[in-house]
Structure formats: C-alpha cells, structure tokens
Length: 346
Image 1: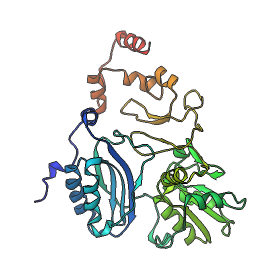
Image 2: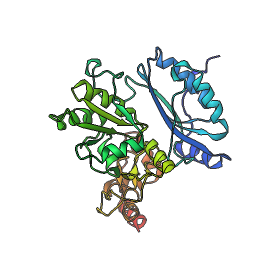
Image 3: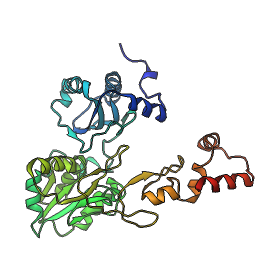
C-alpha cells in the first residue's frame, strides 16, 4: 500500500531530531553515491525511496532527476545490509559504488530530504554541450600522484571557491566560481589554447568531474583525466597504500560537519579577523544563515554570527525571532533591548 502524502516528509524540528540522534544506541555509516542513469519517473521513485528509507531510519540529502541520482546518506549500522540489498535490487542502482566518509559521525544529517530536480548537478548545459558517456580517464590515488608530478600537467578543482578555500591539491587551478554552473565555462576559457595538455580534474566524490570531463572533451580537450571517487576515495586509498597526500587541508562536505580533515595543514582564513582557520559555520541568524570561516575568538565575540547586525537579531528572544521568520516587523523596542544585547555580548 502506498504511503499517505503526509508521511513523505520530515515532521521533526531540528532540535527534536538532534535529541533523538543523541539517544540512538548505535553508530551510523555516512556515505555518498551517484549514478547517471535514465529514470522514467523520478517523482514515483522519490516516494518509494522515502517510504523505504524512513522505516530504516535513513537520514540525508538526495537529488533525483531524469538523468540519475546524487545521494549523501547516514544509515544506521544495524540496517546497512538491509538498505544496501534493497537498493541493489533496483536495476537502475545495481552495484552502485558507495563512497564512505573520512569521518563518520552520527550527526552528519538530522533529517531525510529527497528532492526531484531537473538535473542531479545543476550545470546550465544543454544536451548538445556534452556526451556523458564520453568521460575522462579515471585515476587511482597512485596514478593521480604520478601524473600530477609532471610539469606539463594541469590540475583543476571543479568544486566551488568556498570549498577550495579550506583544502585543495598542490598546484591546483581553483576557479573563482561560487557554483558548478559558473565553473564550467570559466575553466574552459582559462584552459583555452592548452587542449593538448593533460588535464586532471577532481571534486568531492566524482560526480561533478563526470560532466566536467565530458564537457571538456566535447570542446576539444584531448587528454582529460579525473580522480576516481574524488577526494573522499583518494583519502581512503592513500591511507591504505601508505601514499603521500598531495591534497592539503580539509575536504568540504555538504552536511552538518562542513568539512573532513585530510591533512593537518590549515589553508583558510577567518572571514572576520583573517587569522589562520578552516572551520566553517553558518551565521546563527536564521534569516541570514551565511556560510563563513570563523575562528573560535570571533565566534564568541559575534555570538556565532557573521556581524553585529545579525548578532543583534540572533540574541533576540525566540518569540521575536519567530516574528521575523514570518516576515513581520518587530514592534519598536526601548533602550532595554540595547542593554540586553550589551549584557549578552559580555
């Protein structure tokens, strides 16, 4: 029997969800997977997966489209085999490889979100701009290290600029792009005239490089390579094989952790005081939620906010913040408000 519509979304608040996570008597496995595959009815599949995974306590962020799936998940360890068996029973996802997190924590995700989109990675491309069946050569960590040492090789980071700010491969070209859609044409333009050189692409788990390599090959680049499994798999391979990591710093991840440490190198700077730091946080003013690198000193000084204006909002009582979240103006306050803010800053 199909699940009723009201059961196909999360009804817990974030606070309630984290309390429930804290009480769980088991560990969770944090991993990601993707596959480009034709899905005839993403909406129907979305509802089926949501119903199945809710029963298993699965959490995470999943995107479905007619071109495939892109998933980041947290699955209770006792139900992992059940989850895997059910997923692999679906022909379109049979034997899809999992990329397990470098640091698996129970609080990586707090709810299950499955969304249907036009594309699993927004790229702004038209079908005639690339052929996803004609992608770059996949490299192991060992092969990547060997090729990246050659002086004529070009290494390109296909992630967003805020991701490369806290971690990147040595000698990597990092486009000043805030999205994958911006990065694709920027990379093509930057590499113009170097179509015969070896181009090594990398991203978090490999999904963006699948399209990026196909895009570059379609536009005349002859020697395109991509890091198999992305930075996540690279970390596992260098640890298993005792290789030297040419990736330095943290790997940005799109969950509550906002980063997994690969090496002890700290490449970022606090957005507020410019001290050496690679800890990301979201501004605690819910209406802002800006992503920023913030050191412990500034986090305390600004109460976890990006600046004084957001700080003054975040320190308001919950009743007043609730009014703001509804888009309503808060009634004028007296000097008592300013005094309350001053006291709380101390």
